[in-house]
Amino acid sequence: MTEEEKQAKIDGAVERLRSSQDPEKAAEAERLNAERAEHEQIMAGNTSGTDAARSRINPDFVIEDNPHSHIKHVIGVVSGKGGVGKSFVTASIANMMRAKGHPTGIMDADITGPSIPKMYGLHGEVIGNEFGSFPMSTDNDVEVMSMNVLLDTEETPVIWRGPVIAGVVKQFWTDVQWGDLDYLFVDMPPGTGDVPLTAFQSLPLDGIVIVTSPQELVSLIVKKAYNMAQMMGIPVLGVVENYSYMSCPHCGEKINVFGESSIDAVAAELDIPVLGKLPMDPTYAQNADNGVCYLSEIPALSPAEAVLEAL
Image (cartoon, rainbow, N blue to C red; front, side, top):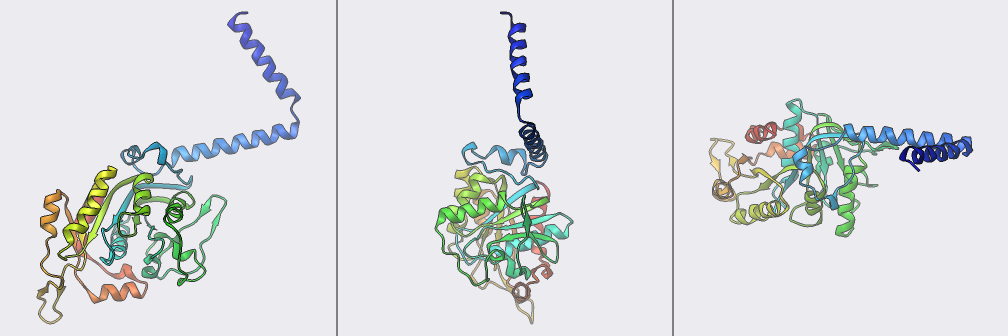
């Protein structure tokens, strides 16, 4: 039997199967095929993250993009320890990029200690449809998803083990319709545990921003986060020093509340830029407490803006 005869025989068998198929089942199969083709088309046109960021993800840890998310740059914000104002820095950088006209979002991955919604005065229920949930929009049009807007009350504790918490972070990526964003900032919990590990392995991160404060252990804080990023192959975009100093309200003299800063020396040793030295300013805390953190203009973050714009 020739190849042409074999193909003709196969084609005939396929045609007989089609003709004998129940019309309703055939119509349902056509509908499902059409939906599958539409989904694949959406997925092909809405792949989030840069090619370089996606190439760093191990195939074993790839998680599916939401078909209605198209995110150009994903940036992690991390710290080696708690209490350095990492969430405030995350919100401040996001507000800065939004003010520059960039569609921006924040994934609050600090599942057990979420503070982003409070800073923006976000309350109420998250809504969604068959394609996933919609992030909540702040008054300055930053898209936010956080555990605190999914709980019955803001005071409800999240008492979960690490793998479950890490799973929620994956859901914030796959089950949330982020839309078209230039920047998505991922506010991670402090340390080097399950959530940072999951984000480093599974999200198409362009890089991370390390947040620290001017204490003696600054070198340890920064290097822990830096070394984890290096081990995971994630670029470090730079470091932000929060609580860097305060200005005397009477004479304007700078006061180093936590001692002399060593961030420049540490950054030079690691060959990373300093993206900003933020002062202790009572108005920053007041605006965050009142849910209007976006009213705080922080010119000290201009180096961070330059680095992000260059991505």
